[in-house]
Image (tube, rainbow, N blue to C red; front, side, top):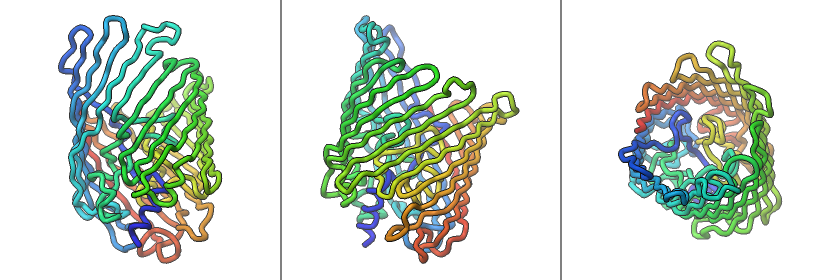
Length: 441
């Protein structure tokens, strides 16, 4: 049954999505700044055109569709006469998908909605508590994005299914790839110690995303940050899921414990960057593990200042990718624009070799090439998502209010749908293209 098939898929992954690497997560126009009061008008509009010659919903043929959203509202900062500062935001998102729907069949082109996206309040201490440093205590609550570390486990609540599955019961309103909505419905966050030295945070979050079974979590992180880098430990506990929408896989989040050790920085090597994370999930069906190691270097004295990166990542057979997401740009943590968004492996039951190269030939223009090699760990009783993908992209910031990003993806699966893979028709190379225009204010 198609519905149960996609409910099972949604459990195993934080499925598609990516916001443009060139677009900051929040855009604001300051329209009032007097004394200790700052008021901003927030505005971001994004529109994308997509074409995929292959599809991954059990059918043959191609797909051609469009997505867009507008985020708008207000945010503020209010000083409290030496007693810290309050802050907050109230933003809406209007989104839609048009055309045939995406290549995975999660949308059908009929999705439209307007909903509140950000609605949070917070207070930070400023210099009020010297022993904790500047802004050493930061407390916030409401509807907001929650991100832990590099987004390897929790980046945001960005899964945006449409009417293409479960008779529309999981529909979040369109813009599936663009991930028009990112915020958790309910949160409470306490951050202690600022961003340097020893610091940490405590978090509670509850999703209202049916595709994520309205998962509720608590998390805590202890980190130590210096100039060469950061080392951090995180513990996450699953409090519950909504059984009306949860697959058997997602039901294991209730009572699940997740432990993670990570590090990132240049380790004292100029122009280098290193990162790793090792995580394990203790759940009813047994332990699952995922990890990655990454190294990169920017050739700062070479024309165009190219940056070369290599990363190896491995996800065990039934790893639950939870709320991971698009973090540092293309390739994190949606690895491969076709594979990560439509075909699989969706960061489960796989090992991935990734090589990335990007350069800046002109101010405001970034060119990039991404290569991924996917190797399924277990194929018996599972879709074989082994394959390779090459993505070519450009990020062109024309000015402060216009960003254009074309991308071409070449995806070659080892097997077709008929032979245990996901791609309909054949295992021939899928030529995938997208063009995204972002207008920030």
